[in-house]
Amino acid sequence: MCHTQTGEKWEALSADASVAEAKASAAARYRDELGKGKGSMLAEADAAAEAAATEAAAAREAAEAAAAEARRANAEEQEAATEAAAAAAAGNEKSNSSGGEGKDGDEAKDGANEANSSPLAAYEPGANSSSSDAAIAAAQRATQAATPAAVNLEARLAARAVGALAGQLLRDQIATAPMPEVQVALRYLLTPQLAKLLRNARPEELLLALNQNTLTATKIWTLEMRDELVAKVAKVLKERPCGDRAVQSLEDELAPALTYGFTRLGKELQVGGVYLKFYIATPEEASIDHPDKFADALLGEKSRLVCVCFFKCFCSVTIPPPKLTIYLVQKTPSNFP
Amino acid sequence: MAKDPILQKSLVCAGVLWRAIPKLLHFDVSHELQQKASIEAAARKVAAAREAGAKIGGNVISM
Image (cartoon, rainbow over all chains, first blue to last red; front, side):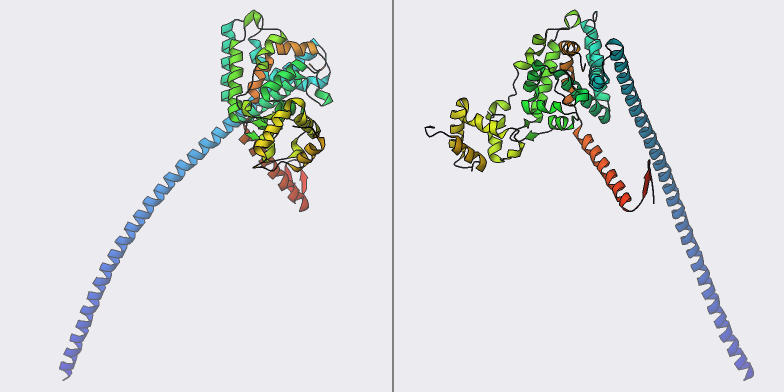
């Protein structure tokens, strides 16, 4: 009985042991599999880490290259600014030594020297046409290669120079003697409304207006007009004599401007400096410098017929501005046709 | 040039006017507006710092 019980117990224990062994081997297999999986996961993680490190190194290199490029561009810009300042200083010294003029006009002179020093070199006595062409090409290349900041600085200085040449600048410190011939030429080239802006010491308003579309009752300027003017000026410069005959009389110099007209403005009906189509569309009387002159021009002998035709055409569909209507009623004679 | 009309006329006769006009027509409007916007933003920042009682000296804003 006892043996039987012991035998049964041993069988039971051996069965337990075999079960335990089986469980252990299964656990070992599981652990091995787990270890393998973990290993493969680790390998994958290692590979991903390596790839990320490579990517990070590449990104760092690209960032360093961009920073170096930015530093180089900054240095070039600073160099250009230094050169411009040196050129301005040279212009100052030259004018001071030659004429000993007051400090007042130095800014305007600097502008003229800055904007035109290299092209003027081509027109010195003894310069031939090939050297002038080379100078023009060099100036064009310089403009194309310049940074936006340099281009804008050049435009500001050129605006000051043109204002000084025409004698339109109002500020006492930079004012020059008025030259009516140049002022008339600029009215043809830039339109009267924009040429008037040359009187300002700060030329931003003029430069912004010249380089974007502006369609108001008093100002019309489009990018097509700008391109037209660029082509016209290029043609004038190309046809201009070089070398010994480079300096012309004032009349010959300004003659191309006095026969110039924009095709866009040829279609617009203008009375007293106001474009009637835009004035009827948006009657902003504040933008008109002299409303009384405008009304007088409307009622003037020359524009009377035009005015009547215009209002007959447009008043059926558009309400005329109230102030203008009142003025017209007050001023219109009883025998007005 | 301020008090010398002869020099002024000579420059016009030498073609300076025709050379200066194209420069007026190559003005980078977007750059100008961008710069103006950044200046305005900086001014707003400084004003806000002043309102908050910061001391501003040179390029340094200290609270």
